[in-house]
Every structure is written in structure tokens, then in C-alpha cells.
Amino acid sequence: MTSFWSWYIILIVLGVTFGTAALLYFVHRIDTGDIKKGESMGHSFDGIEELNNPLPKWWHIMFWITIVYSLAYLALYPGLGSYPGLLGWTSTGQWETEMQKADDTYGPIYEKMAATPINELADNQEALKMGQRLFANNCTVCHGSDARGARGYPNLTDQDWLYGSTPARIKQSIMTGRSGFMPALGEALGDKQTVTELAHYVRSLNGYQTDTHAAENGKKTFKVFCTSCHGTDAKGNQFIGAPDLTDGVWLYGGSQKIIENTIAKGRSGSMPAHKELLGEEKVHILAAYIYSFAKKPL
Picture 1 (cartoon, rainbow, N blue to C red):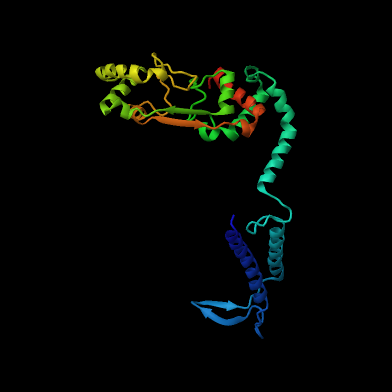
Picture 2: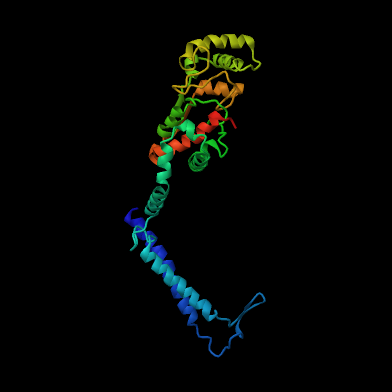
């Protein structure tokens, strides 16, 4: 934060605080003369008459308490621009303290579970409960609370795994992340008709009713442009994350229009690495939870 914005915030905060105090002080000192409490002040507008009804004393005291409390808070904690406060409190420091406390409490449990193979841990109900909480805190934004994903985000319960469903592959995916990329082929294919024919062929691999002639032409194009990633049988390659195009599972949708768009414009997706965020022990437990989907389809 620059010094300008720091002073800008300080002036506003202190201006409002002391301005409120000044208003409270001067209002309390207003002299109503001989007008007794509850009597008219001689002002009226639109049928509304002002009476001499000052704030109750306890209410007045309460306002002063809030002002004093505000000043004390601003002295002890951040609130005045870049001033750190006398206690040196920060939200980051608070978070780190809470995380350290949690690690001290649960660290031995994580360590014990991390020594157990993932395939065995996937049958441990206590580990699965911990994995479920880790999943809820770190994975549901993309994969959903039920792990069934969304368009562009893989369903983890359908037995279709881009990079493989072995314990080692799942753990690696969580630890180091994944980056998927399919190049745009629109310009390379030359015209929309070729893109359309290729899409017909891809859909025919899944039993969809398509234009037979177009699919045959698309097959020839597939052999030239697509087999290096998806294989000659179109069943994909888990080592590079190339999807199986024959199993009826579509990350972005399987309609003719969507497939044409995918071929022409390409796709890209990224899963962030969680090694630094969670640590290997927590990743191990999370991997066991996700592996339980591979073992036991939901």
C-alpha cells in the first residue's frame, strides 16, 4: 500500500471516529433553556412536532464506550492504513498459528496413515472420513461435492480416468497437478467440411447415428491427425492424458456441434499441484479417498 492510500484511509477512519465523538459531545451540551423534558421545542413540519427528548443517559454512555473501544482496537490491531498495530497481529499469522496447532494435533495421525499403502487405506473408514473432509476443502470447487465434476472438470466416479486410476497415478495427479492440451486443428484441416466429417467419425465410435459417408472420410483424417495422441484404436493414452474417444464419456460434451468446436479450436485445462498446499501425508490420504471411487463405483 502506498503512503497516499495509507494516509487516505487513516484520515477517513479517524475523521469519522472523532467526528462522531464531536457530534455526540455537542448534542449532549445543547441548552434547551426553560423547556422541560417531553415538552415541545417549538418546531414542527408536516404535522411532525419536535419534543425535548434527549438520549437516555445509559445510551449516551454506551456510545462513548463504543468510541473508546474503536480507538483502542485501532491502536492494537491493523485498521489505520499500513499501521500494523501494537500487537503485530495479521490474518496470515493467525492462519499459520491455527495450521500449526492443527498439524501438532493431527500430524501423528497423518504420519501413521501415510505409512499405509493407498489401496489398503482406501478400506479404512477413518481415513476415508479424513479424505472426504480434505476433498471438501480442496477439490469440490472443480469436481463438485459429489465428485461427479462438471463440463471441463472430470467426473471422479465414472471409472473413466484420463491419467489412470492406479494409486500411484492418482497421487501423482494431486501432488504435481496436470495440464491437458489439445491443439486447435481448424487451420490444419483447412475447411469446415473436414472438421464436420472428423466429428462424425468420432461420434460413430460411440455408436451414435451419423452420416456414414462423412464418417468414412473422417476416419481417414483421424489416422493422419489424431492417432499420435488418441491411438489407432482411439482409446487414448493415459500417459499424456489423451481421452478415450470410444467410451461415451465426454469432458466437454459429445454433441456434433461441441465435438466440431473441440476439433477446430482445441481445448486446454489445468489442475493445480497440491504438494505445497497440503503436504505429501495429506495428499496420500486424499488419494486413498479418491482411489476408493476407482475401487467401488458410486
